Length: 86
Picture (cartoon, rainbow, N blue to C red):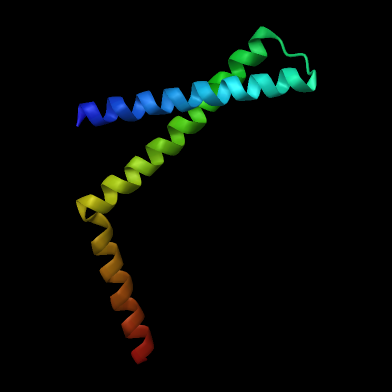
């Protein structure tokens, strides 16, 4: 389990670095001046956006696999059947 999390974090970090480099190149191509602190903020924003997205997807995956979603689904279906009978 820990190995999968480390792989996920490594992939997230790699995608963040690639996005940072491409965005920095695009900003330089447009001729926009940005300070060192701006580049740091941009890099952190990219990294945390991917981290939050990956974390939410992981939570969705584990929630689905644990079976917690099934109970809510069955309750919803029983309410729908009851409403249709009335």
